[in-house]
Amino acid sequence: MTKRRPLFAANWKCYKTPEEARAYVADFVVPADALIPRADIALLPPFISIEAVRSALEKTTIAFGAQDCYYEPRGAFTGEVSAVMLGEIGCKYCVVGHSERRRLFGETDESVREKVTALLAASVTPIVCVGETLEEYKAGQTLLRVMQQISDGLGHLDDDERANLVIAYEPVWAIGTGLADDPESANKTIGSIRQTLGGLDEARMLYGGSMKADNAAAFCAQPNIDGGLVGSASLEPAAFLKLIANGAQVRNER
Ligand code: PGA
Image (tube, rainbow, N blue to C red):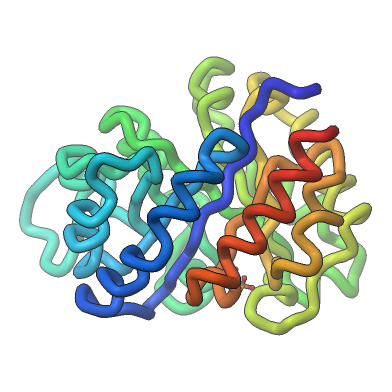
């Protein structure tokens, strides 16, 4: 059995006001806390709702975090929220390099590198997203693209720093489409990622892209997959709880 603990992280994207977030946590917290012996669980709300989630999760072991950050600690950067600020309010995780940020907001492997460094310095665990587009997938360039994202984004870290990361492999064509990758193929890609740079054998690696309650077990049965980064299926407490229970059970039996 691997010593990497399973992790299921809810990427809420631009959903849930503070009031909606509070209502979610009220339904989620007791059954989720009961699943903690089997898996780590994290909620990643929009910035505006982090404080509501933080206070509602007090006295539980469910983690919370953010979906992006800025790497400079402070300064004249209108609209940005820094890694240092996230660390101060107790964020355990922060997503970096999500494909929506890359595609819609100009995120690059260079900014991923800066953000990862800033987050590690602020004691916030980066959840680094990588994945190929549909065009790259069709052209058989999945590994090429993903390896480039890994080496450009994480090549500057030492092995110990890399061992503490979370990496989410999310094929862009599988995100929000209902068309999940084939679990064996995702396992293979993630296996290749583990072999690229030192330290990554110990890093937790998640699958993301249309993970649901009914396919979570198939992904988590794969030896390289440690859980999921979940969008749509995390927006309702009952659906996300079911996904975690199904995935964690198989993962812990491995
Ligand atoms: P999805 O999103 O689960 O809705 O496909 C995953 C993600 O974007 O992280």
